[in-house]
Structure formats: C-alpha cells, structure tokens
Length: 114
Length: 112
Image 1 (cartoon, helix red, strand yellow):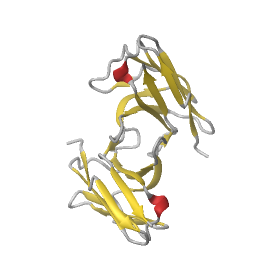
Image 2 (cartoon, chains in turn red, green):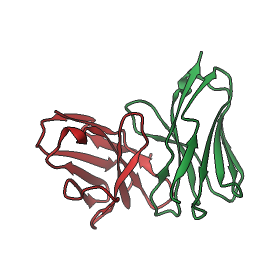
Image 3 (cartoon, chains in turn red, yellow):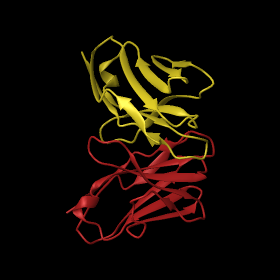
Image 4 (cartoon, helix red, strand yellow):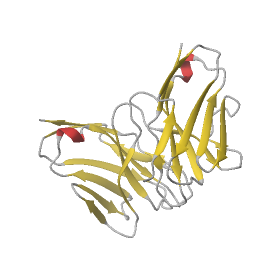
C-alpha cells in the first residue's frame, strides 16, 4: 500500500515550452502533497505544499508563476513548469501524506530542457 | 534554526561492517525524525523513523539512536551489504502537518 506514481518518468523539452508533471496517490487519499526539486548530488529542496482544493504554499524563492501547482483531487496533483529554460533541468519528486507524519514519495521525474 | 546538519558527506564501509550516519538539529519543536534511502534516479524511500519519546528504534539491520538533550540522532546499519550502497537522508518535522526538513545526505558505498 501507500504507492505514489509520477508521470512522465522523464521528459525532454525545448526551451520556452511548458511541461506538466502528474503525481498520483494510487491506493490512498492524500490530504497534502509536496513537490521537491533535486539537483545532482544534492538534497531535496521543497518547492511547495498543496492541499486538495486550495492554493499551493510556495517556499521562499520559488516562482509561483513559473511552477504552477494544481491539487485537483485527493489523489492527483500536477506541477507545470512554464516557459522552461535549461536551468530548470532537474529531478522533480512529489510526495503525499494522508494526515499522519509519514510522507510517501514518488519515483521522480527527470526534466531536461534543451 | 530549521536546519538539519548531516555527516559524513560520504562513507565507505566494508561488507559486514557497521555504517553510522549522524544528524543534528536546532529546532526543539521537531518531533518526527525519519531516515530515507535513495538510489540513483529513484525517489527516496522511508527506512525507519522515530519520535522523541524513545531513545532507540530498531527494524532489522537498521537502528535509530536518538539523544534528545544533545539534539542529535543517528542511523546505524548493521552487517552492511553492497545492496545498501545508496544515499541516505535524515529529516525532521514539527508536527504531522508540517513539511520535512532534510539533511544534506550521505553517500554510502559498501565494498564487497
């Protein structure tokens, strides 16, 4: 149980285009979902926290107009990277929480912007 | 005050040895301390977690030791195996609804 999926697992796009990444909780309802970014050999950096039906809370320094988060249901959250540039290339990971302490992480999405 | 400091940055252990990774925190409001294991190209997976009401928790070969007064906690991997080679992250959060604050990570290599 407690499986979180992400789609796509990897994506390559041209500079200036937008990319959408989906995060789904497969066997539980997620009251809260989190989006992280991880650069090579670095730790996870929290980008934003989202609760179903409400606006996401972004961490300091994260551009909310560039990284659009939609938590449309208790099992789905999406992250859209708008007007992507090479510096946005990274490993994006989501996690989901049911209400307790534990966060269940997705397998990650590798974004490469050419 | 929200930082979690992790050491060492990298660790090489012989097969069968004990791997020890340490973390320290400042925020006394933290009350949940998980350890995650991450393989290259994968998301992190929860290994083991502890609350401040106990000083030690063991699950199989993995043990968390927690020292509340020193604001430190550590992960011990007994009988380390090559399959344990991965990056390990400690983390902490204040309450069940709060975000996790991650340590900087430790790259563990277990030599055959």
